[in-house]
Length: 184
Image (cartoon, rainbow, N blue to C red):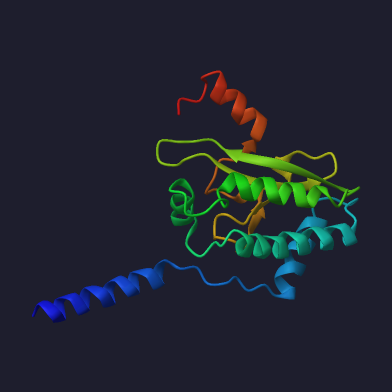
């Protein structure tokens, strides 16, 4: 009985580990093209080639960072690995910083990049991501580019339609945290 109980525990543990792993995200040309079309639709002056380049980088760089940072688990579990010293990078602010920095290297003429932050709430911790908009527009008019949410598989949506988070400019959230107007 003890042997079969231990065997059953081992099987359950193995199944739990498999359930917690994240598969390598697959990206198709259709995925990239859909994001490129949405970026281009941000404004009449958005250059189609820049929109395509931004979309390609957003998808491919997310996958590169997933490999570089050895992200093999859901985001929350990966965060715990970082906090406990098992991984060095992969918190949401790491993804936001890396994505924003990489996209800025392109020196887009018709697009602006933003660092978006969702302030902490009683049930959710602070979250950071990159955002892209037409030149001169605010981050609220743009598209959120969030590779952290699905552990390297890029999530994107218009900022105003991403109801999972309450996005605001990073510096605005920082100021509200520092002056005490945010209670968390």
